[in-house]
Image (tube, rainbow, N blue to C red; front, side, top):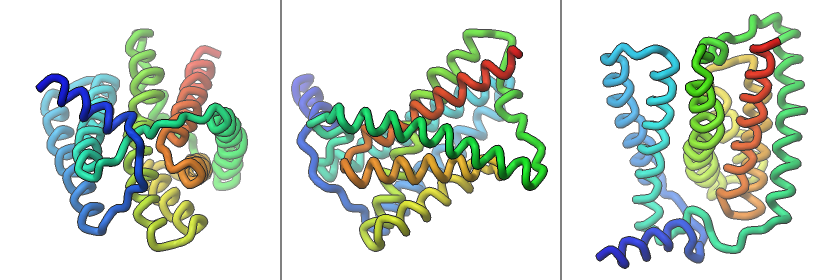
Length: 235
């Protein structure tokens, strides 16, 4: 029994992958399960009346576990590997450059939009900073920089972009999925930043058919962004 479980996990994570396609029914089912489960989980957290940083940590971890579980179930049914074999160091390097591009160009565009529209900068991230260094490291360096990118790439590139791409061209699919990704961050000043990130991640996914590189780009971007937040909070 143990060997069978190990074999199935290896197939899901590292086995030879085939191209995956999503039906409209699967798209609706996956999103419905995630949204419903996350809504119930959020209500439970609110009832506990937690401090905002604890609420953010538990919510993001719960979001990650719920999303990963749902996708692993559907990937197993389709015999699709989450991280296909054949890792390319060339694409890790390209992804690193794309991450830097997102931070520089996307960040610059967001700064320009914020100044042009005279938008008061959001204080959401600053509110999450606590006096406890280890809590900050847990939230920004582990949860936000490692778990959140996996969650968001599974949904927005692995599901939504892929579904649209089955019916439309790359540019249309990348822009629409990235716009959805940006709007759902509920932060006007960050739309250019998240839009560039979404398009860069979609490009990496399009070229490699692997979620490894979009996740790597997203992790790099979130890590750099959190580092700049820490730096700005101490000067």
